[in-house]
Image (cartoon, rainbow, N blue to C red; front, side, top):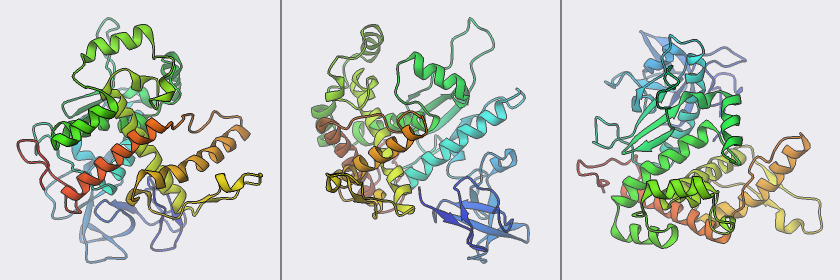
Length: 371
């Protein structure tokens, strides 16, 4: 994530800010520019002070204070590039649901920041029969009814809003023996399934062949594979081959977990670059741990450049967390096979960017990426 600053007073801003804390200017995010801009009201519209001839209105969800993204005045959409993918939102008449929705939207907008930065193809359900749509819903009141499962199916991402409650999410993480569980992590994982359909299944045959060589044959019975995973657990050597225990359940899950970690790595390195971070450890083997993160991770030439910066950074941040008595920020090991899988994701993203000719790609009605 890049750093932002107020164009009026140069105060450092966060991606989620609605107002500048120093000068009080109203702020809005312009996705096309990847810019958080200070605004002035003019003739019923909002105009960036650095481009006063441009006119915007806020996303309709700004009325609930869950979105700070802008929509161009001439755009027929009521919602921004992120919110127009919503299909269902929580019942706001239920106490606490508005705050849960805000937390989920904060994570979802960070997801879309990355997807737009990568120039990955995005389509709504109105634009494509398997376009990306999102349901954010709660478990039913009836305790005997089926619970809402966070997951993906044919372009639909479902998020159980209970994941927005820290205590509930931590309970689920511990109960499932997971090392890491966040709302943003859920979004990154589930959108990995979406892009597997779009870029691997519907991509060139050689991409599917390469996928199967690395991750396995996705034609394996999915339900049976998950039942086996939950009954027997992961194989004892899973760390040698996969980024997480859950990744061993099925090739689809291995890919989605790897995709999520690729987004974790790239966006965190992007933040480190924005802060100008560098490491010069005061140990004998400092040369192996020294690094300066001075490149745009979203435009890295290869996965090796990402990994070479990521490994020293995670050692440093994990050590900082331990100094605060906290768990490791990144409690995972990147084995050689995992790095190779991350390289597949990197190449897949680069291929989609090339197919989109440098812009946000689209899909044709038959599901293929427009080239």
